[in-house]
Length: 283
Image: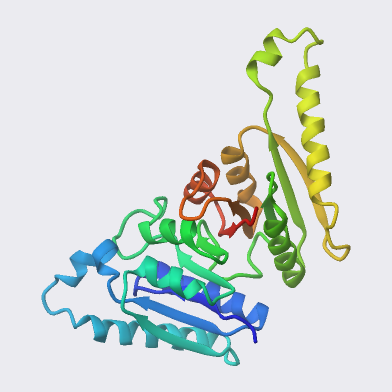
């Protein structure tokens, strides 16, 4: 039995666009789509809306929002199996719980607070940090679709522990029939470039060569049916990966600590120009 793909909705336009992207992704993987509404969402991102005069009850809002999402997904992919559920919990906890029985969670980058899209919503941030399954945050201009947009390639950040990250990147690339850009960031400590007795540029070459060897080792088991392009880029990963996302349809990164985003993941989620998948890594 295939695990469903979960998408979180709250009635906001970003969450409805997330339904479009999630429906495409579920159809691509031939899995059901599970639309989840956390009925305490207002506590974090919509309290002001809940207090407006004439607003319907939370139950009525949830029913309307879920029905609209299901219709939207069904129109996009008529053969897609779509189920809906209202979970009696805060949105982030509802999605994290749903993710225990899901293949992936998809979210808009922000909710109903009206905060500028360049800022990351608290729900998206919390779920990306705590989900047991890969979590997608729809950053940048994704054309409301998982495939067929202007930029197709998959960019994957290759770190020290990247097996699960690479597996997902290769799977997505194979299904989308696009290449993978495997990126390894490297840095040369400043004191070595200044004080090292070797000729100018030699220390930097050592670090770049080591990064290239580490990248090759990580890609040793890359599937032969996926085109992989290798890039070693000087600079911190938190700057290198967002820059690479400008020409990508999807950016895949890892998360090593349960419940916490590292500096790289945090920066990428705030600055990426394309949707980001945060993959829990098993050390």
